[in-house]
Image 1: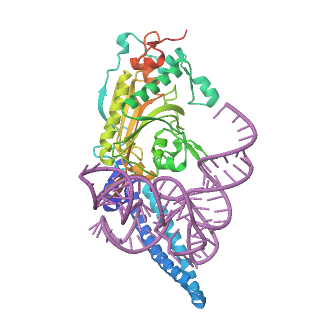
Image 2: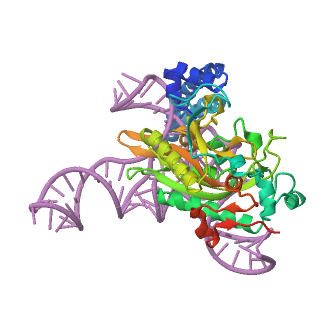
Image 3: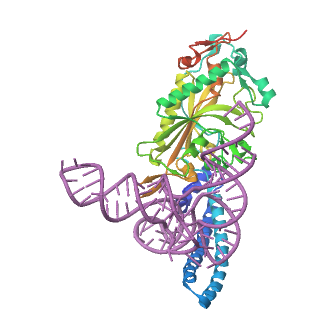
Length: 423
RNA sequence: GGAGAGUUGACCGAGCGGCCGAAGGUGACAGUCUUGAAAACUGUUGAGGCGUAACCCGUCUCCAUGGGUUCGAAUCCCAUACUCUCCGCCA
């Protein structure tokens, strides 16, 4: 949720924000109207309620006939108070609902436009020239099947499309990537966490995932719980309704969890292999910091992600996502995209968002500061996922279908330097 | 799954339908004392709206959550969630 005081004082900033996101700027005026109506209704209710409380005290003191007379009077008032309260509650609910529908305000410098209007910040690492090496590129699934690492058919048999088994070396490789990711995060000062993957509606709503992309999320209706699409949700909820002390610096957590996505609306996209699946694992970095430190913390996240990509010897580029492609919570988002040789395109492997105070306002996460309490800022970012296996297999493939293992992963694979196909 | 107990402020804990945003204690902060610290003593110390852009001040809301009864609810009633104990079942 954005700051209502900011909205009242400078609605133009918010209108511009809506426009840059490709959302309707007229919502701002709806919010303003609802907010004004809410405050008017609140005033009326409060006046009546104050009178009622005052009269109530007289009732308590009065005796006999006088008391009866007072009771008659106060009964009427009670009915009126009740009505006014209902009106005020409804007005408040409407104002909050509208205000919550506004996306976060993009940071200065965020490119305008939609999904295709990102700015490439830089390229790191060189993609291999497979033709020059005399290698016919295999895609990750072909490689994975050769290694007996990925079994899509049985995944479909057991659970349906977009499910898979990681088998043998595939399972080991995923564990290696996630363990290495956890290690990089720990070295960067993040505290490891294994988080719940089912969360309550308030937490899911608080993180901003129940807006436009609600149909991406699995819901367990019988239990009124949601399956998380990332441990960001649980980590944001971790300090909800709390005051956190950030005087010693940001609170940094690295969450390991399974992630679930319905992939509604992506029919036909990335249907082959494990690029886009309903369930995967991820190590996610998350931090709570002071708003004035958020941009620096965000940069730190990006640097940590890049360290991981470099350790895995993957060529990648960094993009600055355009306003229209930010999630509702993010004020700025940097993605790292690894090169995907089989498709000769870039594939997102990390995404880090600065959510400023947007999530913290919704989840009531504040810090006591001089002069009162202030919402904190939240930052999240990927440090490793199952999808990284795709980039690893393809970029490190060799002519015979074997796959080179980057050094950082070897300790987690019993020292293996090469993954050999099973014949 | 069954039975029971509970949920009050940063924490512990009291609370009679009206004088309760809530006793008392702990903690924290400030002061006195002290060379300094500790101890002791004194004082301060919840959050969020609105009136105001901000202070002071005023006012409303908040005693797990949501309803209800009542002129009036932390207190009575109902539902739900969560915690704990016991029994059963089970990875």
